[in-house]
Image (tube, rainbow, N blue to C red):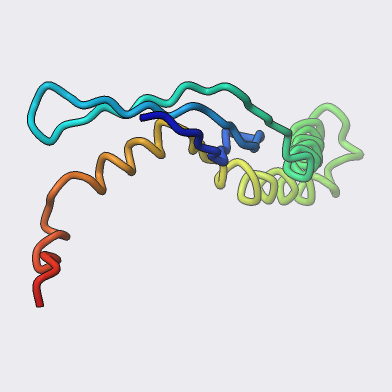
Length: 124
């Protein structure tokens, strides 16, 4: 059988959605099946807010690194360090990627029987 599936994704500083065709075929083993997603359409955009924060943080890092060469910048060096660390904490430490492979891994994990399935037989 075939159908379509739309999924959101995040990849670093980009986010968006993709749409694709899903095919499910029976596997050789009893009860096994194979799910294939063929991406047909994709839309991604840059998270411009995060880019601006990173540019400000880069400016702060340059300010902190430049004071030995321009001694007049020494009073502003701690502010530059705070900007650089703040940019790291706000953006870079929160970056992650999630897309089709992560979605299919989640589906596979949910389909596998495990300790979480104990007591969920449906008989009451």
